[in-house]
Amino acid sequence: MSQSPIVLAITGASGLVYGQRLLQVLLESQIEVHLTISDSARVVAQHELNLTLDLKQFEIDQLLPGHASGDTLVYHHYKDFMTPIASGSFKTRGMIVCPCSGGTMSGIATAASRNLIQRAADVHLKEKRPLVLVPREAPLSLIQIDNMRTACAAGATILPASPGFYQETGAVSDLVDFIVARILDQFDIEHDLVGRWGGE
Image 1: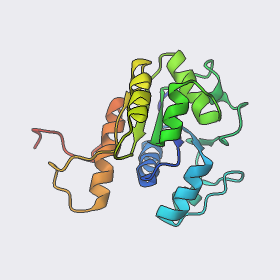
Image 2: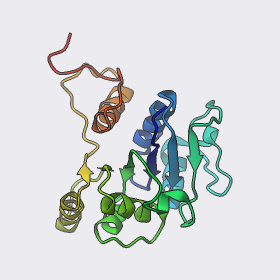
Image 3: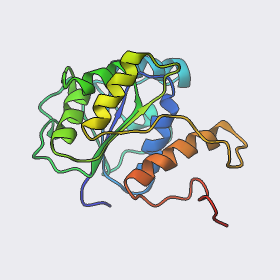
Image 4: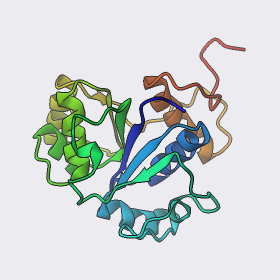
């Protein structure tokens, strides 16, 4: 297990399967994850994955059916500002927002801190820790592009959920793993989800 945990926020953009798969891989890698989920993500989970999430009494098998609770997951309600991840004094390896909705991107770019997700992201920027934002929106308005530029200038990494097709993609899960692999690479987390360019 890594000495410092990773913060994972799942918000209400389409493509919740990216966040679901990322969480699965992180937990299987025995990395401590501090998880928070927006209310909009709860709605998307029902619509896209037919999953019912209870954000007040969350259990891991609600998001990862068949996955047992373990010591490597800590859940925080998105309205709870008294959690450790709301403070810069809580050491982390970094934070990922996957998927990152346009509203969340806006809140991060303007340091609005309207919920725990935005506050935790603001903390990572001010502490100069890795912050990876994974938008999945198309097309993009100029306002959204400006928000991404602002977040990038402040230190965030913008990693759009735009999978490559140069791998042998036989299923949607391969395209999901392509993006999850790129996210893991940002934190130097070993994986075998996809092959390397020029590799065997």
